[in-house]
Image (cartoon, rainbow, N blue to C red; front, side, top):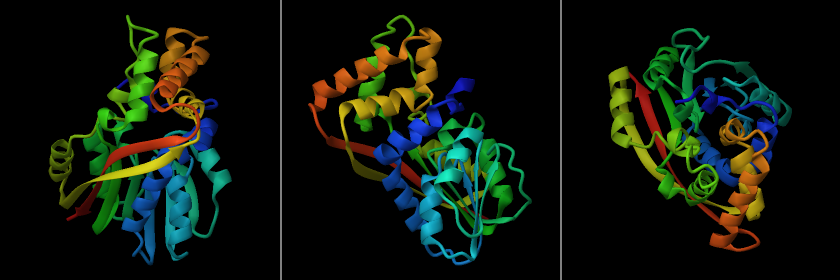
Length: 270
């Protein structure tokens, strides 16, 4: 994975929160929260919290006796999250999932929404999750399914690739949609010591406001932006326009449905 793939800096956090969260992340956040809804006390650690879509849902759904610690590698994302949500027993902390700054057995559950794909050393992050979890604690996370099962992202990536045929950007297929093999995920978790591993395919649908909004979300609100700008510092407008045109050709003008597929994983610490 390229080092820029996990870099959500500059204007990306604000654009991500405005466009990406309602387009792709809200229904999956609600799904994760339902899987943790019986927690009544203790500490819940969130990895890759981003701008706080899961954090918000967790704080609303769980009693104040549950302490929530939301972490992310990117300080800019956490700053947006801290402006969007506050509440009792809620804190934010910058942290690398591969080297968590928390004591052994200090968390009763760990949740991570669409973050594991960005971790360069996934077994290291899984070992850290196992270390920090209390005995019997759960690690619940989701990852995107294959790119060809997530049509909007595939359309946008292909449109941008057509602008650079000699050096096509491959951010989507390489990273956010590059960790979808259930057998691999299960084997890695088992090797780390997790047990009772459940992996479910979960499909969700949102309504995209317009082709332009989707193009802005995916071209400007993700590290795809860095891939474009590394090829052409003034290329972002052209990439957004190309993605908009491709989406209009497929869906027409006005709102349309965004059909998505992801894997949701629940693993227990022995």
